[in-house]
Length: 342
Image (cartoon, rainbow, N blue to C red; front, top):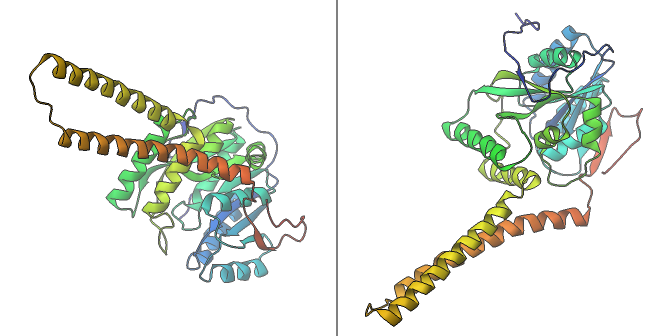
């Protein structure tokens, strides 16, 4: 039996302390759900959301963002939208990526508070009740902390743990450990995020950067209900690069430090070679040491250029100022202004 009042999970409070308790009612709750090839999950997801939100008893809208799905996801979504007016769909013209899909959902959400969650049911809808309780206590951001991750390989768990700790060490923004995008954010935070138009988006980092009162709730993340992960190793590496380059200049600083260190070592080595030539009878071996030096220095130079190139590429993307996304169609948004890009 579902018990939505279960407060057995202990909350984790961030550096923002003692928010003021809210007195206003929650007039509308928006749920933003990016979807990509999730046709097998849509019906079950809606059933669970309906169960939870009916028990909570607040008006709500479900905003599904179809991120260029190649299966029957859009068909399943439009079927729901035709039967339930609270189901709204933002249909992209192609695949723009998970973080952009979340952004589009936030752009179209009208709620006093907005919950961001994935469609794969790894993030349980039953946690929304606790999100709202913390919101009513005055918190502007309530994020879910992954205490345990079911159904994932040891490599996935280890790489995720390394990723979050690397991000925290490299950035000046206090991004909570082991948190994804599953969270509730208040209207003022949503408005802050929608005013930011940078291309390489890292939503959880932007939410942390925005500040406001924040608190975490630990939970056990379930295994995927159906389908396969949308974040293979290649996308995880790109996601990590987006997070690091969006919030840290330390890789560039490290490149400078490595360059100075190598230059100093080279200078010392040159002095030693000159000394041996002039004052000793030691035979200086040539080809092996030269080739090693050339290969090591050449490799380091290419790495440094690659780091610089990552930042320059992002500058180039920002300067072009292309829309973050393009919309093919909107469903159940008849009462709102029709927008096709941002």
